[in-house]
Length: 93
Image 1 (cartoon, rainbow, N blue to C red):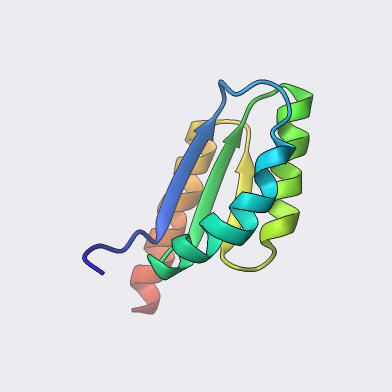
Image 2 (tube, one colour):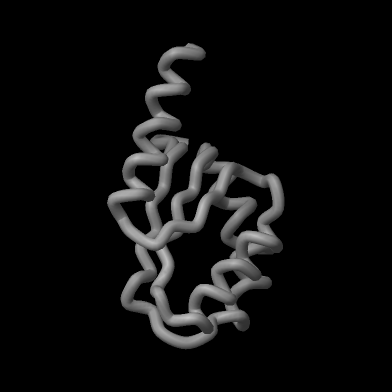
């Protein structure tokens, strides 16, 4: 493996409507590959549209404790959380 990606911000603020059909793939296919690449913190920014937010909650539930995941309403909040996680990791190292 050439590069690791421990921190990821996924911005879905422009995604409208449900995407439940993708949750199984995310859980069963994407998540193991992301972990293999070193993912430890996943910040997911959701649309304020309710169906998209429900799909994000379903994804959160299906991923479980594979890595730390939080759902945010803004990129700013998500970036702050990821920066705090990076700083905490530096202190522990």
